[in-house]
Structures are given as structure tokens and as C-alpha cells.
Amino acid sequence: MRRGAETKEQMNFAPEGLCVEEPCVIRLENVVKIFSGNLRALDGVSLCVRPGEVLGVVGPSGSGKSTLLRCINGLEIPDGGKVTVNGCELLPGRKSINRVRRQVGMVFQSFNLFPHMTAEQNVSLAQRMVQKKTAAEADRVSREVLRSVGMEEKAGSYPHELSGGQQQRVAIARALALEPRVMLLDEITSALDPEMIGEVLDVVKGIARKGATMVVVTHEMGFAREVCRNVVFMENGRVVEESPAQRFFSAPATERARDFLAKVL
Amino acid sequence: MQAFLPHRRFSRVAWDAAKFMALSAFLLYLLYRGGRALPYHFQWYRVPRYFFSFQDGALVWGPLMRGLGMTLAISAASFVLALVFGVSSAMLRLSGSAAGGALSRLYVESIRNTPLLTQILFLYFVIGPLFALSRYVCAILALALFEGAYASEIIRAGVLSVDPGQWEACHSLGLSRWQAYTRVVLPQAFRKVLPPLTGQTVSLVKDSALVSVIAVYDLAMAAQDLVADTFLAFEIWFAAAGLYLALTLSLSALSGAVERRMANRYSF
Image (tube, rainbow over all chains, first blue to last red):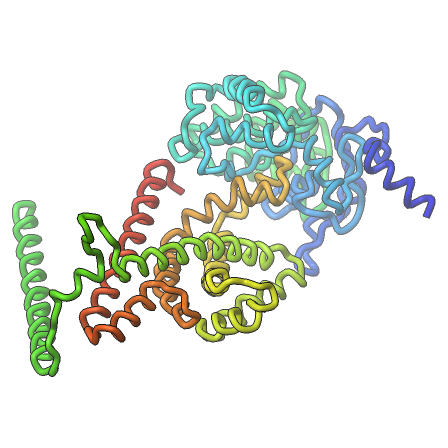
């Protein structure tokens, strides 16, 4: 009884009570995710993302890269292991998941902008609903963030009036506006026409230069090489190799990473 | 080839129109023959006074128009309530909660598989006295429950048709389930369900004629009364049908206008 009361108090008045000091912004310990009974999408993944680090996640399709990202912000709940964001453990409860999500921004392959809202409304919605900012404050921040991705002139446009590259830049702005501790980018250029990839990657490079912490799932090896400090190579739900980006691309340590790079480069 | 096309299109349209007119003429002829064969003496000139009349220079609405007003009021009130029932039931069904899903299913299936007439009588004679509900409240409640069950399935389909990526975007931004529904999912679902929902609303207006069984003075009740008083059965019922038609057609036109307005603003 006594213990239960204590826990409840901590939940209500000291959410940091469940969090610990932690050198990694994101820490995964032996995370397992199983789909439809027997498919092990993640098969014991452990990694650590430090503040200011940009971590690239590469690997063949179906290797578990996207599932890895989705486990970090609770879009998927791991079946085993432990996910810690900013020292707070991700638990299946709504409260814990929301606490983690407030610190994590995510950008999707298919943009997922809200089609019935203008670019600016897309960016300001969560600021008002989740962060409880006033309309004026949210507007100010939205304009600022849209300017930083070069979209201030399209603030009043609906998503269908924008090109794919522009939509993705708005989606990045939408995530950035909440000032997350870490950004998750899930193959954000895979749905784009080739001529629009550059403008989106330039935006991401700019964010990286400002010292943002990011986990980037990508098929753009040149981009990963340029932007990422470390690279994780995944296959069949496991981390096969984890190396500094320069070394990974010039002299991969494992046979399988060499095969993969030979195919995609 | 280019020069041929407009000419060919015109001839096809002309041929279509000719076929349509021939068919209409034939149907009208049948109608005329049927009317002549009927031993009935139409007295349309007696009907207008039941719409409205002038007494001492002032406009006085007749029973048909007063009935129409009641039909309109009851339909409007039950439409709003039906939306509430429909959305709540759809959300319960989609909530993932076993009890909520079962409750919603029980509601939808029991309402859809029993006659509306029975439901109206049940509400008025069994539930009504329990809570001291007036006949009007019973009528509105019965219609709303009935149409809400159909609306529930329509809205559920609309919500399911919204891209799951929209939910994921909401979740990743930290929006609550309620916020995601009200700000993102339902506004998109609404656009998709507007046409079938309009059809359901047209049904609601027509079904509202059944509330006359609990002596609510709606359009159908007014027509029944007039027929009993005047014996102008065909004229009065045709007039009432015309009023229902006018009401439902304006509903469809309104929904069409809303649809076009939304299509102009954004497309998805």
C-alpha cells in the first residue's frame, strides 16, 4: 500500500522520479519486436545515441530500420527489452508514451501532413493542443520555423498545392516547432521525385549543423556519409555493424555490410 | 478525324434525347390512361387553402404548412442527435475496448433489425412514462436512435478510410486520441461521408412520417386529418408528397453545395 501511494505521488508531482540521469538521449537495451506471432522485426537491438549525435541507420528493406524508429516514440510497443528516451523509460501506459513523445519529433516517408490544414496550421496545431501555447505565440513560432526550412512564403498553402519536397519541408517544420530533444527521420526522401531530394536533405543538413540529435533511416548513402557521425547497419532485425560513418563507408568491418554497400553504391 | 468528333457527339446526344422523350411520353400516356380509368373526380382547386389562406388580409398558414414546419423541426432536432449517437457509437466501436465494441454492436444491430414503428411505440409507451418524456421528445429520440445506428456505420467507414498515417502523425506530435479525432480524423472523414450521410438524412425526413402514430402533428398527420375531413385523398397525399420532395431535394442541393465548397478549398 505504502509503495503504491509513493509511486502515484511521483507520477503526479515528480515525473522525473521515473527518469534517471543518462548520458544517452536514446538508449535501447536488447529490444525485441515480434509481428504476427513469429516475425522478429527487431531481434535484440541495443544502441545509444548521444546528445548532438546524428546516427544513420542503413540496411536492406525489411531489416527492421523503420520498426526501430517506431519503437523509440511508442508507435510500436516493444515485446521485450527497454527503450529509454532522455533518461525516461518508455512503458506501455499512455502517460509514459506521451512523456516520451513530447521529446521526440518524427518525420515520415509519406509526409502525413494534415490535408485539411494550411502549412502554418499544420505546424501550429500541436503547439496549441499539446504545448498549450496561445494562438499568437504559436503563430510566431510557426512562421519562424517555416522560415528556417524556406517555406515562409507558402505558409497559407494547403498540402495539395505544394510539391513533395515542399510538403516534406513543412513536415520537418511541424516536428521542429515542438523543440524535440531528438528527431527521427524515417526514409524522408524515399517518396520524393529525384529533383526534390536535394532541397529536403539541405534542410536536414542545416538542422544537423545546429547540433540537433537525430536518428536517420535512409537509402541516401552519400547523405549518410556527409551528415552522420555514426552508422548502424541492420539486417534481419539485428545490428550487424556499428561504426563511425567515415569508416563504415570506406572500410566496412563486416562481410555483409560490404555486400550491401557494393549493391547500393 | 478531329472535325468529325463534335458532329458525332452531337448526333449521339440528339439520339439519346429522342429516346428519353419517347420513353417519357409513353409513361405519361400510361399515367393519363390510368387517371382516366380511375373513377375519381380530381378537385385540385380545393387544395391551395390547405397550404395557406388570407383572412382579413393576413396570411394564415394551412394545416399542410404547419405540418411541414413540425416535420422540419423534428427532423432537424433528430438529425443533430443522430450525429451525436452515430459519432459516439462509431468511436466506441473503433476504440478497441471489448465492452465498448459490444455495446455499439448491440445498439446498431438491434436498431437496424427491428421496425422503426415498433421503436417509436416502444419509446412512447414503455420508456416515455418512466422519464415523463413528452410525445415530441419520444419522436425525436426514436428517429435519432434509428438514423444514428445507420450513421454510425457510415461514420465508422469514413474514419477507417482516413489514412493510418494521419493517426501516426497525430501520435508522434503528442496529440491525445480525442484531439486526433476532433482536429484531424473526423474533419477528413466528414468530407468522405457527406454523400452517404445526405442519403441517410433524406431517409430521416421521410421516416419522420411514422411519428404521426403517436399523434405528433407532422406533415403526414396533417394530410391524414385533411383526407378524413375532405375526402380529397389523392390531391392531399400528392400535395404532401410534393412537400416532402421539395424538402429532400433542397437537402440534397445543400449538401451538394457544401461538397463543392470543400472540394474548392482542398482536395485529398
